[in-house]
Amino acid sequence: MAETIKTDVLIIGAGPIGLFAVFELGLLDMKAHLVDILDKIGGQCAELYPEKPIYDIPGIPYVTGQGLVEALLAQIKPFGPAFHLGEMVERIERIGEPMFRITTDRGKFFEAKVVVIAAGGGSFQPKKPPIPGIEPYEGRSVFYAVRRMEDFRGKDILIVGGGDSAVDWTLNLAPIAKRLTLLHRRDAFRAAPDSVNKMHALVEEGKIDLLLGQVTALQGSGGALSGALIKRADGSSVTLACETMLPFFGLTMKLGPVAQWGIELREGELIPVDTASFETNEPGIFAVGDINWYPGKIKLILCGFHEAALMAQKAYHYVFPDKKLVFQYTTSSTSLQKKLGVS
Amino acid sequence: MVKITYIDSGGTARTVEGEVGSTVMETAIKNSVPEIEAECGGACACSTCHVYVEEGWKEKTGEPSPMEEDMLDFAFEVKPNSRLSCQIKVSEDLEGLVVRTPERQA
Ligand SMILES: Cc1cc2nc3c(=O)[nH]c(=O)nc-3n(C[C@H](O)[C@H](O)[C@H](O)COP(=O)(O)OP(=O)(O)OC[C@H]3O[C@@H](n4cnc5c(N)ncnc54)[C@H](O)[C@@H]3O)c2cc1C
Ligand code: FES
Figure 1 (cartoon, rainbow over the protein chains, first blue to last red):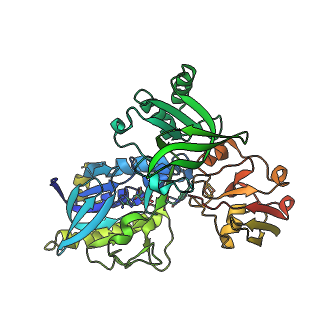
Figure 2: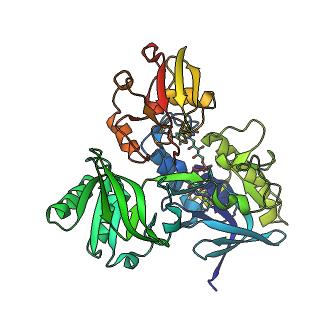
Figure 3: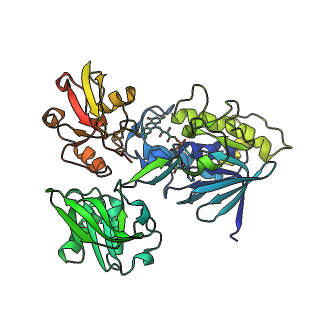
């Protein structure tokens, strides 16, 4: 069995609120690990609107989504948080009072005294194209991510999409595929210009095929794909023989496993919390940021920051049951400044 | 107020009133029109507010911007009359606008 990682606090979700939670916990001497299904840090700010402006962070008149994430990372650096990216938390079990055992879909185990759910709108998952009858092929010949390139060696591959994922995987898989076709709805690609140029070069050398259109139906049986019916931009249809399809249509947020953790939910999607501590109905499990609900809740980053501060106060009593918490300011407390590495 | 009709994938039409200056997406959400998700709240960052502009209205609603075209790549069954409804501003000119919503947004 894999080794178990022990930590004071496990934070589920590395969005802005999960990040700021590291700061508030760190000031009170609690160490945190963060798990996020995304392969990058920053939640919605990094995935949905990295370049768009935010105007309502107190004291910061203007910052982009990615700018805020970078500022938060700089702010929490003194506390050395550990990130586990590209992993989804699947299970939380109570194994002590309080002590939790947390399992990810990659088979990693954590033991933590406190769990903080900062899961936002849920985990980011690939969008699935609404092609009728696609389900039996999923995971067998239709994949939304490449986990092991070797699985695609010698295959007749159809990649669908026009962004970085589609173009990058086209470049990476072209040398090992038997044949590779890239299908996109139009002749413009959003991917990095350099990658797009490389892709066009491969097309010109006859190493891959580029097709403009959209998939309307799949052919095959028992989960094994044999072809895709494609409607071209001019309205005509073709059938393309292929045995593997990789659709890349970006990500969408799905609640995911949160619903199976035995925590009380409101309308099946939000976690009610007590507004003095942001604890859920399960002692030792907290919920902060977009995922929680309480009377008056609004889904704003600044509200999540406040929630993280109060959460840390209560979490302290679980992590250090025998210690007394003394309230201090970062401005004047030498002990806090030592932790921040500024004194 | 401007009348906008949303026809869902099953063929049911709903006519609601939109405020000038708001968007076709916001008008839908305010009136609980189904089949528009608008996950990103209108920032042209999610493509879950995809609609088809009915024949005859394309000129008045205009062409998608390059940024909107990029986001449309993430939508499904994109057609020449596809738009992201958060990028269509309601104006007096759009009185009587008809849009259709797709069966699935994401
Ligand atoms: C376009 C847009 C513009 C916005 N503008 C503003 C604004 O101007 N001001 C403002 O205050 N707010 C704004 N918001 C809202 C703001 O982004 C959210 O309130 C904020 O991101 C919530 O942060 P969070 O940390 O709670 O969750 P998120 O940012 O949603 O992050 C949650 C993370 O948890 C991960 N996760 C979930 N479940 C699991 C699991 N089981 N295992 C592993 N990982 C998991 C997800 O993958 C995700 O990365 C905007 C949102 C959008 C989409
Ligand atoms: S609401 Fe997200 S793109 Fe329109």
